[in-house]
View (cartoon, rainbow, N blue to C red):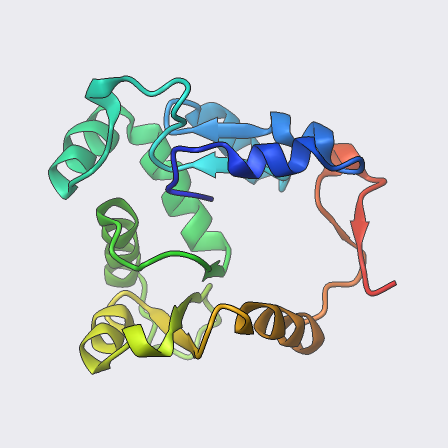
Length: 189
């Protein structure tokens, strides 16, 4: 999931021998049925939350919370439902995200409001990786209200260390990226 309008993720997959066809599984807010099908099938998907530069029109650009409400909530309610489904069923690790996108923040706030994260039930969790210098108590409090825990790192080089530690602490044996691409398996080989 990305809030960027560019297609850098798709281009990275296109340039990979193993994953080139995964670049075709890219959707935006106008493709709610495709996103819902990918979520249901647990298939790999690239989701452009605000659209893709090559196909977004001027009246469909999201910059403010008003844009989000007017466009995504009212004109594309299926997309909002898909995002709620995603946050209800999967834990999320936000990397490279500043934590202030009105669309995502609204969805996370709604999720926190509708779920009792103070119960002892096991619910999906949200984590935001942020530079320690950009994190303070106000931001931590704000994120906590949205059931998002901040993971502070000192510099961008710490991403690799963090991801390696996550893989060690919570390994996923033979994680298949896509049911249609069963030959693509991630493991510790």
